Amino acid sequence: MKKLALIVTLLVFATSTAYAQSGDAKASSGSVYSKIGIGYPLDTGNSAAQSMGLLGVSFNETFVGTIANPAHWGNTVYGLGVGEIGIDSYNATNANGSVTNSNFSVGQFQLQLPIIRGELGVSASFMPVTESKFRTFEQKTWEVDDNIQGETLDFNVENRGSGGLNRAELGLGWRINSNISVGYATSLYFLSIDDLYVARFPQSPYRDANFTLKTSGYSFGHRVGTFIRLPNILQEDDQLGIGATVNLPVELSAERKQTGVVDNGALTLTNDLQNAKGPIKLPMKVSGGVSYSPSNLLMIGLEGLYEGWSGYENDFKPSEEQLFVDRYKMGLGVQYFPYVTGSTKFLSNFKYRAGASYDSGHLDIDGQRINTLKFALGIGIRSPRSNSSIDLSFEYGIRGTETTNLAKENIWGVRLTLNLAELMFFRPKLQ
Image (cartoon, one colour):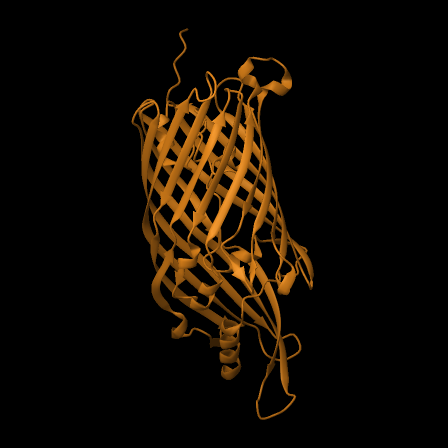
C-alpha cells in the first residue's frame, strides 16, 4: 500500500499539464489555463474601461474612481468609492468533448479621496491580480510491476485549484498643472493557492489518495504613472489624453506545503520533498494609450500593454517556465454620454460604451499561443439624486485553440460596478 501511494504521488507530479476540464455539467470553475503558474492575469481597468476593452490609463471621469493610472488621482474633486462583482461562464471544448463552467468573482474595491481638491488625491484599493480556479481530469494506466507483462492499473486523477495573487495598494496622485499629472503607488502583494489532487481507483480494491499543495507568499510592489491632457487640439473644447503606467517587477517570497492522506488517514502522503521555500519572480508591466474627446459627449480610446512574462520564474514549477512568453494586449473603444445635452428623453439618461480587444496571452503551449479576442458592451445608469452610478458591462471572448489537445474557451461575462460619488461632501439642507 505504501508503495502504491508513493507511485501515485510521483505520477501526479510527473504528469504534464492537462487541459481537459472535469466532466461536471455545470462546475464552479474558471479558465482551464489558470492552472499554469500562479493563475491567469486579470484586467485592472475600472468599469468604464472594461466596457470598452480598454485599460483606463489615458482617460478619467470626474465621478468614477479608477486604479488604472495613479496620475488620475491628482484630478480627484469628490470622494469616490468603487465596488465590483462579476459572473463568467466558460465553455471549454477539446477533442474529447466540451464542458461549461461558471465562476462568481468579487473584483476591485477602492476609496479615492481628495487632499487638495483637483490637485492632490489619495487612493486605497484591493483587487485580484491573477486567478487560479480550475478543475481538470485525467485517466491513467500504470504498469504495477515491471517484471510482469500486462499487469496494469487503471485510475484517474482530478486536480482542483483555487486562489490567486491579490494586491492591497495605497497611492498618491498630483496634478502639477492643468496639463500634466503624475502618481505613485506602493502595494502589498500576497499569494494564496490551494492545489488539490485526488487519485481514484474505480476497478480495484485500492482506496482513494488525495493531497493538497498550499502555496503562499508576499512581497511589496511599486508603480508609477503619468497623464498628459492637451485641450483644443483640432477644435475648441476638444481634448487629447495621453497616459502611461509602469509596474515594476515583483519577487514574491513564497512557501509551499504539502498535506495529504489516503482515505481514512491510515497512510500519510506528506513528502518533505514537496515542502519548499523559494522566490517567484513576476514581470514588469507597461501600459499606455491615447484618448480623443471631440466634445463632452464622445470619446474614442486606443490603449495597450506589455508584460515581460518570458522572464517569469517559479522555483516550485520550473518545468512550466518554458511555457511563458511576453504578453501584448491592444484595445479600441468608444463611449457616448447623451445626458450631457440636457435631453429629457429616456434613452438619454444613460452612458453607452462599446469596444474590442486582442490579447496575445502569456502562454505558448506546444507552439500555440493562448490568445484572447474579446468584445464588450456597457451601460451606465446614473442616480437621479447624485452623481453616483451603476455600471453594467457585458463581454464575449474566445480564448485558446482545440489543436494539439488544447482547449478552446468561449467566455461570457457580466460585471456590475457601484460607483459612489460625492462621498463626505454632502451639504446639509436648510430646514
